[in-house]
Length: 290
Image (cartoon, rainbow, N blue to C red; front, side, top):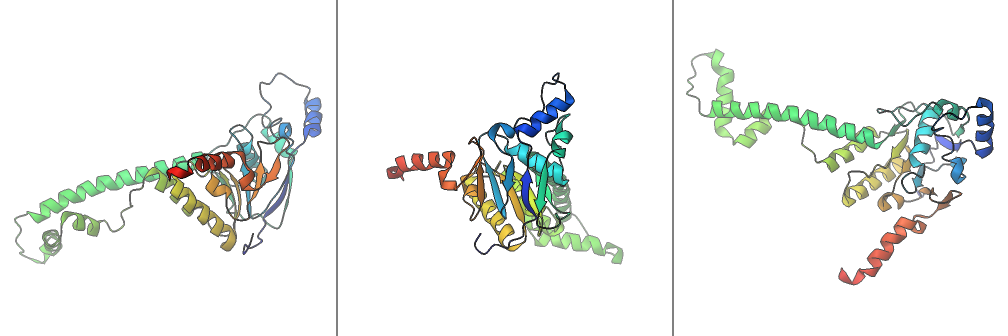
């Protein structure tokens, strides 16, 4: 990527192929399980190796295995995560068959961020803001009480009350509340909160796995997120592995894109991807209406 620092924490990752999986099944000699997940997911589309760039993207329809890839990589590398990922009785066995190469130590701050993490962040922020709202109501009552109080200054013991009364009488209610709640947390919409989750959690010099980060974001916010992620990789030593449908993220400069809708999985330019071509054809058809 032009101008991007080549900080490659993760360079290669190998998943078991069909033959390795077959040998594993022969060893356990059991077929009574309903699911061998994550076995038979990636091998079914011929996906046994990933080579990484500073920004690597997994593209494909729902159920193609994008989240499985991220969960397996996170599990094998022991990355931090705040919510539980998909697992099974065979998840540990599958990880033992995986291997990887690095360009150095994987930073301790590295982590995986999923839609569940973003949702929990939004709930936490909303809970915090509800607490602030209750405090704000108390300050409203304080303002009215002070503004219309019959107050007479008699001694220095009344000094704090005098300041409160003078502040209430010299300012509007909104200015009084802002003054009294200097550390108030600004309320955010779901989209703003989701965007804030990434800007707060993604720090310098680490590896981040992001599972469909565009969820809950408007088109404008997706473009802002794409720019933030691109800058994080170019200037702040981050390496990113992202699963996404978003054309704005797919268009990130220099990103390596694995099309998991293909069998076998293929590397493509973002302009070659089916969903992007669908958008292009649609807008081209309606060009005269703009």
